Image (tube, rainbow, N blue to C red; front, side):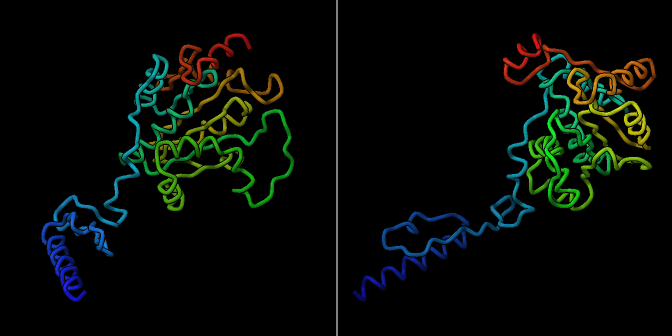
Length: 266
């Protein structure tokens, strides 16, 4: 019994020395009589560290942003080359996703100081009544698509941190009047649910060193007929220099193939 205990103590001592010197796990740590398994302590650069600053897992899954159609390629080029872009097209063409992805890309590259995401709080033909909670809680269901697009490009932990620092702001359109958005990337989503007056107000929020992308589908407005101002605004801005109006079509839909089939007949 005493000899067995002495042998185990010698193995553990040798294991500790090996782990400390070489920073690697030793197979002898996993013998049947081994009770304690030590993590390696890497002294060299690039080793494992428990600190988040050395943990690249948040970015490991980041997908390369590539256009999946000619229309998407045109939209991405327009965002790179213009400070004001209007993206019009049917559901599933990636308007919101590409705009938010470009915003995150600009923020991460240090080209802008903050991201401002806005969309109207309009219900899709169904009244859901009063929602509980403060303003953020009430607006959460309407702004959920923007959170989804953000979380696909950044981890939710990173999104929450950036929002806490004020680098990402998600605001309803009703609170945008009177603001001047400098050094920002502004995305106005679901613009087909905005009136002409609202869109005029939003477009004039653009400040210095800023980019604004307005996305929407004129055929899918939840307002009464004739109230949406997106189509009228787009027609008026098409001849204006340095403003790009990109029109996506059914062939640019990247959702389930049935979506493109339905859009053609609905």
